[in-house]
Length: 116
Image 1: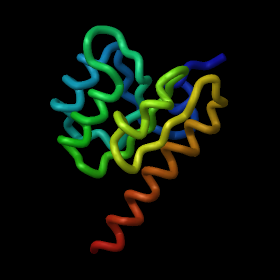
Image 2 (image 1 turned 135 degrees about the vertical axis):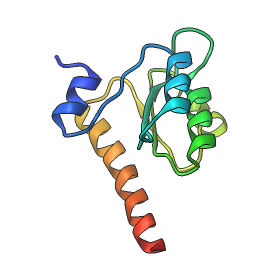
Image 3 (image 1 turned 90 degrees about the horizontal axis):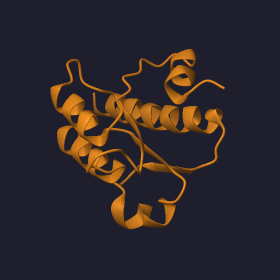
């Protein structure tokens, strides 16, 4: 079975995959060009959680689409998650992930077009 990054690439997304919350935060802060969206597990290696990564992403880009995936973090989504994000609980099918990030990216594009 393909992993998340491979599935997203096959669906036409450009993917930057990292292995820890710390690395994700470093890449978000250094991103040129900017990163269009974030998919993060809640439980990450090292100190930073997916919640932390999403909050930093939103500090960098207040409208960044965020999709959380978790086997046990859904109950905390309301208090820990960023607004206008999507939570997908494990186990899930890859099409759910593709639909979720596509929806958020499309909503952002539609909102930007309305402002022009």
